[in-house]
Length: 344
Image (cartoon, rainbow, N blue to C red; front, side, top):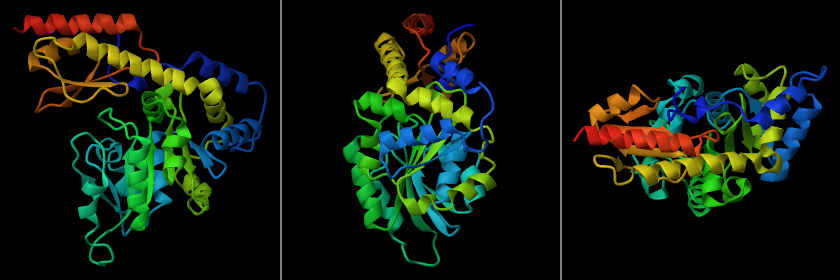
């Protein structure tokens, strides 16, 4: 099979996570999160993110986002997010359907929100004729592979809280962002003023499973019921918890994310200067965005799996994962050069 650069979701499961799943399979255990592994995993999150963290495990990233936002909003509210945000582009309208409130989408050059970009959306606060902004939702790392620094998150949190809003973080690739910045997980979340977090595991070595984390007790108060109604209460929850314990032990999450990020940097370095190839976004995490001629894209896609991000501008997205190797990157970069030069 040719190397895949379509998504970090294409990668398999990290061997240490697989071993943890096998170990968790030894004998019976109480269901629905009453087992020792789930208790240990929730405590491990508290140790890392802060004692105030209330942790709930779910199956899917979309569910983590939607259910977290459900605990933060009512139907007359609005969620402010970048136009490129996953909750706007890639969740098939699930937030609008299940929240019953409005997404207000903000155009950004790099996938990142700022207080200045958000300010115009607050002009109708208190006006009963308009949906009321209630949550600012940011993605870390963004869908364009860029990252928010701790200071940028604190600025957004301060802006949100000053206007009576809450800050949600879609952390599907939080590990990649923390590895890129050399930060700890707390520094980018509770320590920066985030109120609720969707913590991703699947893109960083897990077989399945995400975590919803609240840093305000009032947001977590009814979430057990919200999760159950949302069909995300796992009966054999120990198998999600065991994976997170493995991921968080000895910072496996950071090693996995660092490998993915390093492979993206290597790929960007190898294709830099190739005629007809232009990197369109800063390569900060494990995504490389590049514009190529349509013919080059078509020929490469016959050999490798990757997505076209913007068909009008012929921009592609190349993703790396913890399982991507240097040899795979070199082979793909050589193919890019070959096909680009053949188009001249």
